[in-house]
Length: 424
Image 1 (cartoon, rainbow, N blue to C red):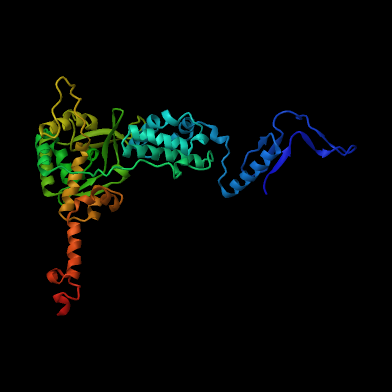
Image 2 (image 1 turned 30 degrees about the vertical axis):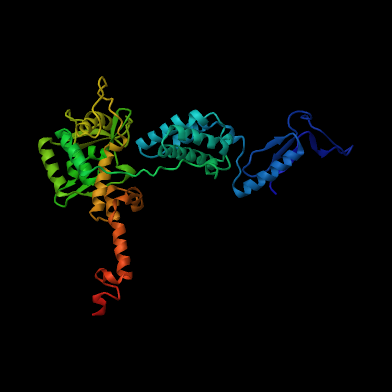
């Protein structure tokens, strides 16, 4: 077995005259027994021989399995490990990195940051989950726990800890609510479209008619519109972090092509006649000053010719339109211009839900809708919008009836042995 135990108080070689092993200069000082010689494992000292033997057995076995983590490496606090080793390696879009930073900085470090990595146990995490459930929605709490689990998984890879305590069966994540994504009624959609200012009407049209996300609407350029084929190429979005706007690829870093109905094309033509596109220069990929800057003509801009900032637009354009349409109440008396009632279900994204519901109810395939929405998989589309498909169950019942019920022969399929086509 790899490794050995050294007695640091007694010399290894015997005296040639007395035949006895003498004492070393360290005799009586410090811990007596040192375990060494395990490949990839630092030496460690112990007071008693029994402790040294036990640690040698465990460490050798763990090292052979690839599970060994030196407890001394886990003494660094969770906060220090995140700041020094984990956060510098976080990759992805600028807005994604900012979201991860906020979850860790605001919701993890204040509760667990002072604990050494090796002390972040399942027991500590169970208490932490309870606190999260009391202060956050289940969905947001799960996103925080996911970020924390990634930190701890990285610590395992770095051999700081032997296993990720977030994987313990007793650490139960909050369950997602059964609340479904609901669309607006057609009447509400039309009211908001008609009540919003004329310059910004096109944003509602693109959200309802093509399912574009808010940032994608703000980043749409006239060269992205293919009137002849009835398509929109979604190539970029406008994002904002700490007041700084920038261009970025659409969500997931993927461009896509979306079907453009004639009604949307007509609205775009009228909009561009009234509000010609403006060439806007912004950083690409993030708000940092050192980023490369790019220029793009934009379909929708502010009256001053700037790219639209989502937070300002939501407060000054979107919420007033919702109020005029009767979706939310007017500003309270004495309230500041930005102190609108919260409307989490009536943000710009509800237009995307409405678009999905209309497309599915019209009988379009989930695969096609997933491609238009930019989902990574049709499974995601089904998870979000399966309840928008009322015809699916009825078609299934009709198919079964055609097989089992003699009274519905007219519904028999062409390949059924009872169909007229099969008998002829």
